[in-house]
Picture 1 (cartoon, rainbow, N blue to C red):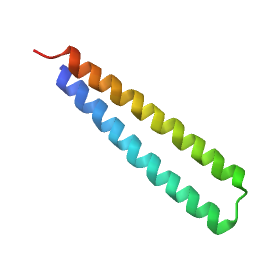
Picture 2 (cartoon, one colour):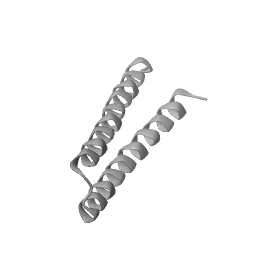
Picture 3 (tube, rainbow, N blue to C red):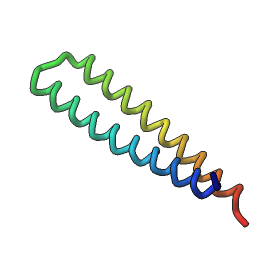
Length: 72
């Protein structure tokens, strides 16, 4: 597998994680509001989303660094 293939796979994984995290977070927030869930569940969803966003930030940095080291 070439470096370009690896970078493309990493970028796709990061993009999917961002979109899925945002979508799931919005869905959980809406369902929680409709059913009157306690605020602790909203906080739990917020923390899970923050963890996923932090992972995408770190993964994006690693992807950027991978591109820096493979320059011709």
